[in-house]
Amino acid sequence: MSKLFRLVSILLLIVYLMNIQTGCANIIPPGGGPRDTIPPRLIVALPKDSAKNVTLNKITLTFDEFVEVKDAQTNLIVSPVPKNMPLVDYKLRNVSLKLKDSLEPNTTYTFDFGNSIKDVNEGNIAKNFSYVFSTGKTIDLNIFSGKVFLAETGKVDTTLIVLLHKNLSDTAIYKDRPRYYTRLDGKGNFTFRNLPEGSFAAFVLPNEYNKKYDDSTKLFAFADSLILINKNTKPVTFYAYEEVKRKIEIKSAPVEKPNPNSKTKKEDTRLRFGLSTEGGLQDLLTPGMDMLFNRKLKLFDSSKIILTDTNYRALKNYTVKLDTAKTKVSISYNWKADTQLRLIILKDAVADTSGVMLSKTDTLRFGTKKESDYGSLRIRFTNADLSKNPVLQIIQADKIVESIPITQKELFRKLFKPGDYDLRVLFDANKNGIWDSGNYKKRKQPEVVQLINKKLSIKPDWDNEIEVSF
Image 1 (tube, one colour):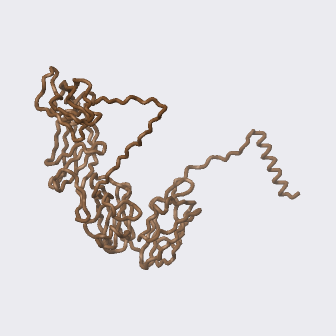
Image 2: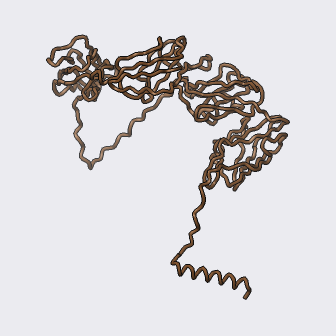
Image 3: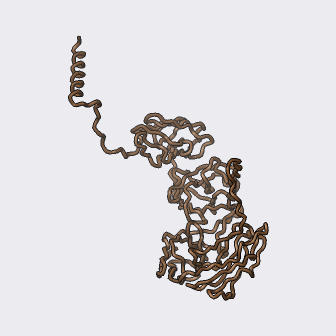
């Protein structure tokens, strides 16, 4: 028996005896140290990063730990844009790219992986990782940067990309793929790096496969003039717009087939309605109180819908109108604060398309809100250029609550509905009070809306004041 064999046998016996004495079935290693938060680091590249006179069609990037590439065909941006995307593979610490297209002479190539490279163990991302080489004697170092906003709202859409076309024809954006493109960051900023000198046409589009302006419902933006790329190129701001609003199709719910074994509920054939008041109180700032019917009306007699005081005396100067959809009747009146009223609806005032009338004459009791239910609003505008025809847009739940042309340095409202609001300013070039889209064929830029970085919070029975600068 060899000495090595005897030594191994003795060690195994010792481990066995220790397990018996301690009652342990498993030996658990001690816990590790702190979690790894360091992203993968490039240690070797072939050809090396920023190499010149490159002729190889295969690139190998070696990192200091095992890595993976997430959705390479989606996240990788190659500049200039190739006809065919390279094949990307990864294994252990290596990421390889096999180029399908022939390399252009005297051209700087960049491979922008964005945030797609991460380590295998902890998922740490090599943020904004890029690799550069040149087929010529120099590396292009020109930069073009700027911002992209949505013209109608002033917000940012990070799914958009900025494109540069070397073909300066007006129709290039319709039929050609761009020479270069880049993403937006979370704040709407973009940056092109390693660009050659020259003139380019610049556009903004959604990041779709063909990267062409082939649909007027797409978000789109264009630069008024050519972008001259050199070491002194200044930043540019784009305002993206939809020339034509996409129609949203509302799909009707599928019709359920009757179950012959179930008891069929008797259909409710009554004509019914509800009032638009809030807890039985009419909003002082809303001129119309609405009666909302459950079916379309065929018969409507406004003289049989009567607004009265608590003594049932008919009021004057109110109107009763049926809307075009024939399902809503609006009673408009100059409402007085903290007042009790009555609304009398005679049985034959309305009828649906089947001739069904109300089941009886009805009298509804309601009141109006108090002035203390509202807050006053005072907005002081600083640094406001009134020559740009600014219009204040007050927003709640992404809807415009009110648009107010700004004609002086201060706005005051005695009564304003409590709540939290966003503010933005429309620069109304044609003074029509609404936002107008752009048109590339006519070289018409959209009107611009600027977000105000202040929230408007209206408290009831409170003097609410705010300063706004734009």
